[in-house]
Amino acid sequence: MAMYDELPVYKATYDLLLAIFKFTASFAKEYKYTVGESLKKETIDLLTLIYRANTRHDKAETLQTAREQIEVIRLMIRLMKDMRQITLPQFVQVNQTVENVSKQLNGWQKASKL
Image (cartoon, rainbow, N blue to C red; front, top):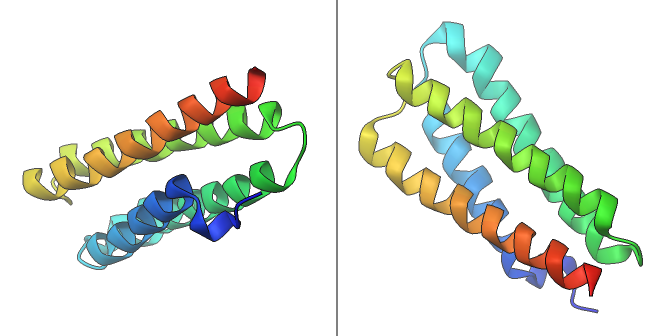
């Protein structure tokens, strides 16, 4: 079993967390302590789920929860773009990372059902 921190999905999610910490720093006060903190927490929770899925024999439920988590993160990022807290280039870049994580979780979930 690969170390969880060597998994491509873990690395991509960690990169997502770094990006979120960077762009939430410039959020307006009303968003920084609400959506900004939620985004950080949801992404840290996602990293925890990836760790758990990697250590469990039955991964299905944990991976399903992780897939739901990435959709919540995607929604909040989109909301912050629409509220003009994230520039379009930032949005495009972070959304590519979100999509990458989502595809990897999807693939992992399918492979674990085999």
